[in-house]
Image 1 (cartoon, rainbow over the protein chains, first blue to last red):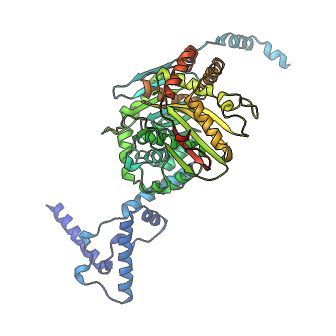
Image 2 (cartoon, rainbow over the protein chains, first blue to last red):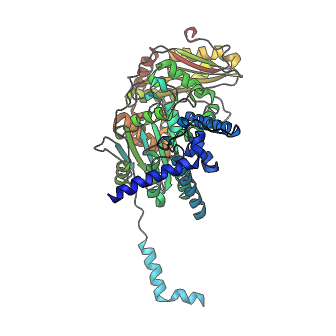
Image 3 (tube, one colour):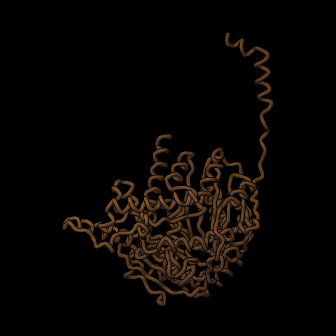
Length: 108
Length: 438
């Protein structure tokens, strides 16, 4: 019972923090905000084209909104439940491959 | 002083013992052993004591099994060998192979694909492990396939026009199945998706279509290699029996030379006719035997003195069909006469006993010298396993060649000549006659 309460509490805490961070008001997803280092660039190359297109659209829309100092109407905000991590798993894979490479270079 | 050291009894004892222990040279009787595993994988091994071991894993996954909507999948499959699989990443595969000094190659023909690894005996176990990682559970990640596109373009750009002519000849002769090109068409590059390649691989790289051959190690180890493979077992790709239609295809490419391949229907692999036609192909001639020397072969005599040209007889046999004919490269202005002469020779082939004898000797030399090269031996053992389910040693094949009589060969030749001629031509075709003008 206690465990369940904690789980519920944790997810609502997450949701609260998510809404507080504010990027969802621009219609962005979490993975749109990743800093584009080399790993992320490689991961982006591996995405199917339509996913990249959607991401670019969200980013351009966010820049436009930011320039006009407005945010989306509330019903268009990204919801926590709808924010799927489309890039992070691929970034993790890229990182793993890089680690493997570095490990090898160190040994031989 | 130093000479005294050798005089001590202990050392003398050791040296004499050492010499006495030298093992007498034993003549090893290397025989090819083969069997079929319960999962229908064909396994063969030749333990010839070579310091370099070769392991070939072959599949019935050549271009004849490509679906008509995905032509070029076989080329893509062989080009994708060494990319990341579920078991290991492309990076680790290549580095680890380099570390043990092994060499890996993937090659293919119209019926089969061969994954072959060469390694020294002391690193053989590791090499086999990497080979297993390479072949099992291939993933074909889309971004790796798109990174691989320049290699496909290079393959195509590096194709000699003679190869194109023979490829067109197959297309003309069989249309589908065996007629499928060995190479992806430039328009299909990048258009075959990872999913369709995965589908092609999972329907062709199955245990029932697999042969494992080892040259330089024991049969038990070959069986272990076969059992360790993690292969999908699903619906298998089917290929219709290849029918010989006959026809002609030409590809105008410009240049100074015309490359023409002419052929009639040959015999399927494993049949005595196919061996007879192989002798006949050699007897027709394969260029001068000395460098810059005179070409005195029947085909060269038939074409006559038209300036520099190259002509050779050829015979290919597949599991249910074959082609027998000639390939020639001639200067564009002499193409008309030369191609007509070659066509005539093919229709009314009449080989003298001397030519047949020379052909037999040349074919024997070719069979035996190819057997000296371990990689081609490992691959040809796999091919034989697929075609006939049994393996003949190269010396047995040489004996079979010797036993062919002249009448067998002329008979096979006349039977083949009854069929319609097919033609594939590439290069400058201004004066090359069409096949019905031969």
